[in-house]
Image (cartoon, rainbow, N blue to C red; front, side):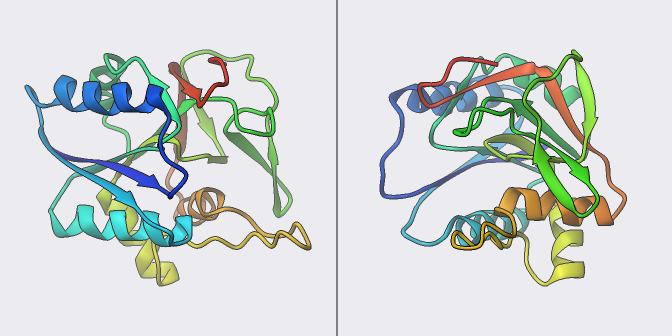
Length: 196
């Protein structure tokens, strides 16, 4: 199995916690998997950065892309378990900057952040933040086929309408009828925020 460990980042720099996670992820996966890496430092919008990384994963014939945002850290030993699930789309759980989990629930045509999860283990969800997520490249191909791109940022900061590229992507995956999972055992820390 071939995995692209992909890090979308900006010019703000990376968290020191992230550097350990990134290095340890590679060291943990290399003995068992064919691992390629790409850290993309760019001034481009996040949807363009994620789309570039998705295209790179497909060009490299990777089976999965493992997104690790530059402000995320976690115990990398969980990755063998996550990969053994053989799921098309699974995310870890973390607290977002606005204080909710990275899980969103669809109510009508809107996505609402979930404050707290009372379930443990593998949970089917409507949408997730992609800070620590594993996505099969066949899903990326299907999303691009139906929408013309892998990721699109639609959030308007003035009107507060639309969504970030992660929720948009989750919505496209939902339209394809592909389940999205969060595994609460994959606990991630988001920058200086403690684990959920």
